[in-house]
Length: 167
Image (cartoon, rainbow, N blue to C red):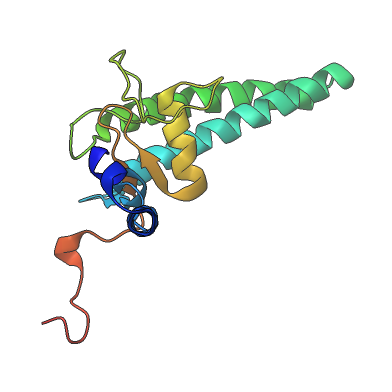
């Protein structure tokens, strides 16, 4: 900064103008990584989505039961509770099996470890459920332990074919 004070005014403007044109910080430019195998995440998210649909069905049946009690609503409630319990159990074990390729943590289930500063969390939910919902909505997630972005749709580099002329 002391060197800037000793320069003439026109040179100061040129230097400050050239520093404004610098690219954004590296954090903002980094793209999401690919996963070596996205299958564990896909299976875990499918079972989690089924669990969430079961919860929505059960909640709707409860509301309809309180509006107008009937035997059909009771059967739907009991079926929804059983379905939600089974899919929660399956989703739990499948989410435990999906590991981050960098830190080997379980980004879809909270383990009680300290989350990374860049980890994403939707306020009423925990980090694991937030990652699961992020995968359902956009096929991307951020590991809560190492803070790396991952894209389930991006093909791994070892499976990519070279572009024409890139040989």
